[in-house]
Length: 133
Image: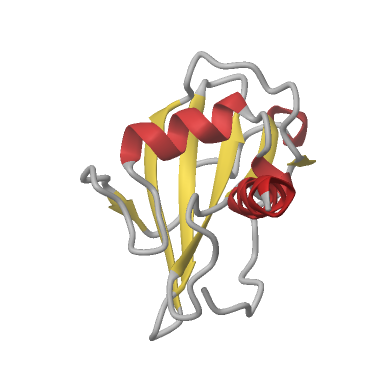
């Protein structure tokens, strides 16, 4: 019986921590500071048409998925950060939702956090993935 309880708890912890954000201090800091979740933000962020990164060197830009701490919700939002490491700023792309939005917010300050353990992609602007939630 104790083994069953232990296994259930271990499985729940594994499911609750998606592998994409395990040990990613930058993602954790952004999610925590702005309250990023499937329902949006808890902090007000400026909305922009597009990030002002067209003149930036591609080597300075990274993209980072900001997973929902409570897992995916079918009609919820997904968020991706476009990070300019040279300018120390972040733009946040919100996609999905019931109506299928594609909205940019920012810039916000890049948290003073380590990128170790983060699954980042180099350069470029993230495009809509077509996934809902």
